Each structure stands twice: as C-alpha cells, then as structure tokens.
Length: 262
Image (cartoon, rainbow, N blue to C red):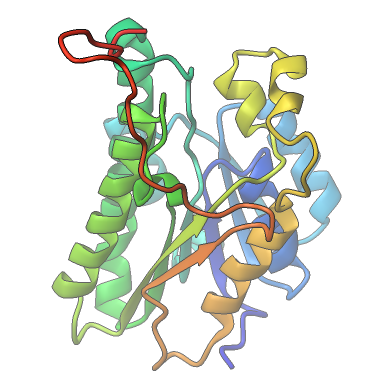
C-alpha cells in the first residue's frame, strides 16, 4: 500500500461534507493537509481539530487567477502536492429546466466544472515532473443516471466523469493516477445547500432510508489513494443499499399536450 504518512493532500471544499471527512481521514495517517475553502472561520476550526501539519487556504475555486497564484505560492512544506481531492461542488434547486434559475446554473458550472479544472491544472505540472501523484475527483451518480430537476447538476457531474477519463488518457505513462468517486445519496449539507437553507425540505430527502455518510465516502477516497502506486481505480460508484438507479420514465399525458413545463 502507498504510505500516506508524509504525503501532502490538497482538499477543496474542505470545510464540510466529503472534504472535511477526507481531511480527517488523511490526517489520521499523518499526512500534511492543505485545506481549501471559502469560510475562514471553518478553516481555522478544522486546523485546530486536526492538530497536525495543516495549512488553511481561504480560496474561491471559481477564481481562476486566485487559484493559480495560491497554489503556486504554497509554503515549501506544502508545495509538493501528492494527492488532490476535488471535493468543492454543489447542487442548487430542483426545478424543471423551463423554470429554473440561470444564476443557479451558472453557479453550478462555475464551481463543479471550472473550479475543478482550475485546481487540477494548477497541480498537474508538479505531479508530472515528480512522476507521481493522484487526482481524485468527486463526481456523482447523477452524472450517469438523470432525474427530474437534476438537469445542469447532472450535466456538470457527467463532465467530471468524462474529464477524469480524459486526464487518464493524457497522463498515461506519467505515473499520475486519476480517480472519479461517484456517490449516491449522502447525508451532508448537500441538500441544505440545494434547497438554500431549508433544513426541513432537505431532511425529507432522507426520510425512511439510511443514506451514506461523509465518512463512508471519505473511506472510498482514502482507499483509492492508499492502494499501491501501480494501481489506478478509474471510477467508484457507491450508493446506499436503499438507493438504486431509476427505471425508464413514461409520460401518460394524452397526445397533443405536453407536461414538459409542469
């Protein structure tokens, strides 16, 4: 197995959910952690909790120039990134496409696609030069299995899947690994963010079933990173037992009418 005790792990979206859980899991191995997030107070709280070699980096991954400058300017102790965990991402709203907010669509594209691209591009040259490294992207089952209201969110996660495969093709022979981790339903702040702070609506998503936890997904992230360096897991699709992909949908509206905008 790969010894992660002295590895440098850069985690975006590190102030909650998968990112925070991954930070705790890698810190347990003694890894050096670069925590990336927008909420400074949460970054400082995470640093205090982990109580090890941790560098909190307040950064909006949507800002291309800021990402480039921040990663290029990491302190020497944290500059050689061995593992990048692209965890920053979000879903906004669950409206059908004809009624949804274009601002929400823009925010999802800017974070889930552009932010992930900017962070990946910033660390890749160093990984290739050192002939080792691992890019772990957080995709979603929504990138494979569409559902009503998932529209652009699912589209962004389909991009993450294809981008991850494209990176594998580009990096063949470089020694750099790429994995796309694709979780299903998971009880984090995800639904609270999707429903813009409506905790009651978010809680209904998980009623009557046991979803994944952030720690479950962090264990998957850690496992692929800890495998021997000649082993690459291309993708992991993980769901709770009580979730499965949907069957085909059929509209029962009579001919000549439409329910597309309902």
